[in-house]
Length: 210
Image (cartoon, rainbow, N blue to C red; front, side, top):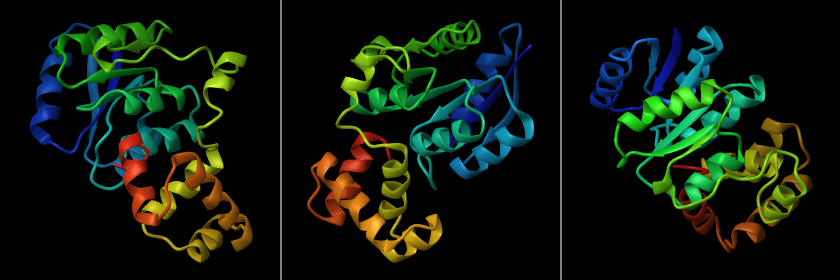
């Protein structure tokens, strides 16, 4: 039995997915999570085999939720869902998603994707418009990520775009204000943002904050 966690803030979407998955032999929805923070707690409590995670959630983004889960459970199998593709799909795969599915694609693709990731593979919807990244740790992937944020930069970016000041971020992460200012400069340079408002807009487009 494949144990599935559904993460989406729309009840009607969760009902539809549950009906689809539980109508397929060998799959069971063990928990439904409405927010990103709840998704992290539910994963810790139940350790499902596969997580179906919407990118757009009301508190923290699905991308950030995935990142938090993977920090504690690096082998978690997470499939991301979104109405958007392109950079969002690429970012999700770079950060460790096992797969990405566009919501406009056929629902039956979800079952194929679940089976593929359970077999150890990765699944990228052709509608996403991007290619699978190279295996983790490969030199080609490292080259492709030279303009991406580091894990620490991503963490700081999330906090800044949630409205925290540099002083607040420094206190929360136990860093000096100078270090946070330096990270913020690197983040804004990499994302091409000149102001805090632009940073939030770019982060949202990348799927870092939705």
